Structures are given as C-alpha cells and as structure tokens.
Image (cartoon, rainbow, N blue to C red; front, side, top):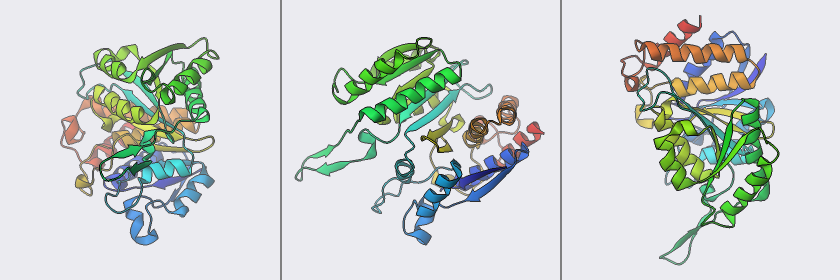
Amino acid sequence: MYRISIIPGDGIGPEIVTAARRVVDATRVMVEWEEVMAGQCAVPDYGVPVPEEAIASVKKNKVALKGPMTNIVGAGFPSPNITLRIKLDLFANLRLARTIKGAASPFTDVDLVVVRENTEDVYVGKEQMVGHDAAVALKFVTRQGCQRVIRFAFEYAEKENRRKVTVVLKANILKLTDGMFLRVAREIAEEYPAIEFEEMNVDAQCMDLVRKPQHYDVMVMPNLYGDIVADLAGGLVGSVGLCPGANFGSDISVFEPAHGSAPKYAGQDKVNPTAMILSAAFMLRHLGESEAADKVVKAVHHVIARGQTVTYDLGGAASTSQMTDAIIDSIS
C-alpha cells in the first residue's frame, strides 16, 4: 500500500487529477490518497496559496501527484509552483516529450527528456527597482545547485539507457553564472564515459531542436532556459498537453503535467487529461510499479491512436471523463 499526497490544484486541475486518480486505481495498485489543498483555491481557507499542511503532507509521504496551480496576479503572493519547489527543495524538474501516434505533429520519432534546475537562476523572481526608471533581476547560481541537477541528468540517462546528455546554456556571454554550470557539467561528464556529452548555446540549440529533434536525447540546463525549451519540446510532439513531468528532490518527488491551469476551461469537462495521466504513469514507474505504468502508457497511446474517444484538441469530441473512461477500458 502506497500513501500518496494528491493536490488537485486550480482551474482544470481537479478534473484532470480526478482522471489520473481513476486511472491509477484501475491498475489495481494499492494507493491510499491523502488530499491536500494548494494553489489559489487554498487562499480563502488558509490565507496563502501553499499552506504548511500541504508541505507537511508531501514531506511525510515523499510522493505527490499534483495538478496545475494558477499564479495569482496582483495579490502579493509568489508563484505557488515555485514556492512548493523551494520549500520542498525539489531541485530537478524533468519533462518528457514523446511522439504519440494519432496526435498531430511535424515529426514521428521524437523522444526527448528536458532536465531543468528548479531552485536558482533568474527564474526565482528576485527583482528590485533601481530608482523609477530601471529594474534589475538577480541570476543566482551555486556550484551545489549545478552539481546536483547535472548529476541527476546523467544518473537518469544511465538508468534509462539513454545515449547522450546535452548541456544547454549561454556561457559565451554569461561567463560567471552559465560558465559555472558549464564547468561543472564538464567535470561530471568525465564520470560517465559511456554517455556522450555535448555543449550547446541555448539559442543555437532551440534552432537546431526544431530542425532535427532526433539529434537530442537528455538535455540539462538552468531554470529559465529549461522552462522555455521544455515547452518547445512539447510543441514538437503536438502539445504540452501530451507531456508528463515531475519535480525531484533528494527524497521527495512531485509528479505533475507540463501545462498550466487553463482557468477559462475549468469545470467544462472538455480538456485533454493525457499529460496528467502520463504523469501518474511516471509516478508508478518511480514507485517500482513498472508493469502498471506500462499498462497506462499503452492504454493512452492506444486511445489516441484510435482517435475515436479523444478530446477536441486531438480532433475528437469526447469529454475529459469520456476519454478517461476509454483509457480505463483499454487498461482493463
């Protein structure tokens, strides 16, 4: 029996999290779900988007399945996603972008892994005004932060029999911050001689990625670049709505889809649950339930390939719950 924290989140989060939960239950893996609130929905009851109850639950259970959470604009709260990652020290974000037959895409053979440093860089939003007419943002990078995310990328590549790790940055201009990331990557790469190592400037890498994504395998990079490249990778396979993801710390893992909360579609039972369901499959594999994870992935691919019970973005007319039903039927 696994005890797992489940965070519905905001917008479409509750609908797709329910879908993923139903699919996990259909695999007959024994899970006791502990539901906790976080995101905009938590503010009325707790006064903050990320209550300590949510943090305590994930710390206790070590594994969480999380829906997307809305950034609250103009309310003085930091991003709930960033807050959760920093409070739980989830230093590595991992997103998968894999071609699915039946999903519209310019390519047929994409299989990418984007590993993104999660707690440093300019993305953490440390900014200040300098007078009335200028502003600065702090790009903060540490050797420890570089080491642990780069080592994570190589360890993942080795474990999953991946062939190459590409480090992506702009060290020719940002010689101290990105330069440190590159130097650490070169040092760690020497410990993994069986894995090919490659260096790319982020601008050139993005250009090359849309020309020949098959050239890439595992890519590791600082926080801001990772946010951009992960979405680009999603576009190569048809949509970020098809891409699962996870955030990893030293002993805590939080699984979530690559896309946002899409509040305008909340409660309409019409959005694609694929990324959330595949994130749940990713979670099952992490727990050692590889057979159940394979069943979920195969069922998702089967339903999308058939194209008969899929949501509007995949060319169908099915609701979220109808597509979920079809995936569960395929598992059965």
